[in-house]
Every structure is written in structure tokens, then in C-alpha cells.
Image 1 (cartoon, rainbow, N blue to C red):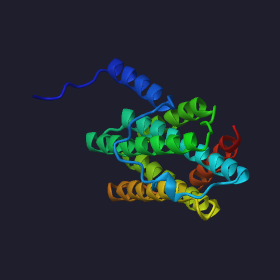
Image 2 (spheres, helix red, strand yellow; image 1 turned 60 degrees about the vertical axis):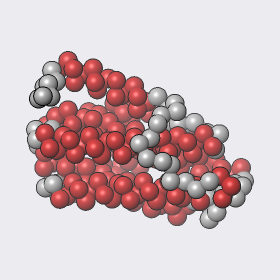
Image 3 (cartoon, rainbow, N blue to C red; image 1 turned 90 degrees about the vertical axis):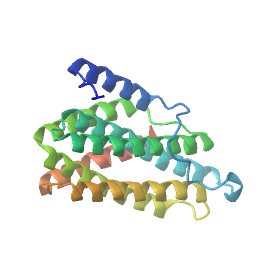
Image 4 (tube, rainbow, N blue to C red; image 1 turned 120 degrees about the vertical axis):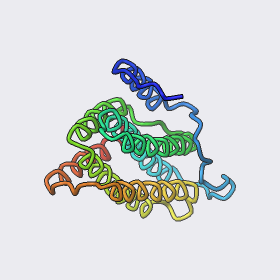
Length: 215
């Protein structure tokens, strides 16, 4: 049986449902198990370390919210069904990242940033515009976004307390996934974004990082 083509209203409703699911920092079920080792393997963090790790994980969670919105926006406007499916597969892996970050924040007795609805809305719009520009540019946006995310994760890994094995395992797995998304985008024909666009993306990313760390 041929799959029914979704109407614009169907896609709008599906997108609204996706947004609600993404922004609900409840007990979501990941597709893959949390890569963190058992709690018994972790040494006790002092108050300052706990606050810092919580801030880092709040930033990473916000980044995953942005990724969900970007992929959703790009899937909505992608011309090639194969590209749309690739975006949706990547979004599924990002859902795992959301769940893992939320698990770690709960363990640290910390919350997600209150700015997530803002980040989601902005990222959805940017993703849709990238898709409208064409699939090669949309893929280029994915590749550059994931490269910048990998650099952020590498910096966070350097800042972790040496014995925080649980957070480290989560971030290392996230890094591997994000690098894979960048590679896939390039293999699918991603265009290289102009330098001013890459710089603008970096500036926006720094703004998101600095604000989400605290609030």
C-alpha cells in the first residue's frame, strides 16, 4: 500500500505535536540506552562542580532542542524525499540526546533552560529557510551546525571534573553521533556555507551557550 501524502494541515499539526514533545522535559523514552556507566562508578561531585556540570548539560540540552527544531524545519521544506528521510533519522538520534541530557540534569538536581521555547522557534524558522534555499544548502547548514556542536562538546569534555564518568560517557556518544551527521550531510552533497554565514552561526551559538548555562 502506498503511503498517503500528507497535506499542509497534516504537516502543521505534526510539527506542532513534535514541538510539544521536544519541549516537554519529562521522562521521554530514548531509542537507545543511556551510555553512562552505573552511578556507583561515579565519585561524588562537590557543590561547585555539580553546578558547573549542570550548566554544561543545560547548554547541551538546549543545543539538542535547537537540533530537533532545525531538522524539523528542514524536513518540512526539503525537496528530495530522501533528504527529508535523512533529516528525520538524524532527529531521531537527537531525541536520544535529549533524553540522556534530561536524565543527567535530574541526577544533578538541575532543570533545563527556560529559554528552550525561544530557541526552538528560532531554530525551526532557520531550518525552514535553509530547506527553502535548496537541499544542498540545507545539507551544508547541517554539516556546519554539527561541526560547531562537536567543537562545543570537545570544550565541555575538557571542562568536566576528571572523575565525572557519567557525563563524559554521554557527551562522548553525542559527539560521535554529531560527527556522523556531519559526515552524512557531506556525503549527500552538502554545499560549503559562505564564511560570513558560518561566523553568524558561531555568534548565535555563543549567545545561546552563555544564556542557557545560567537560565
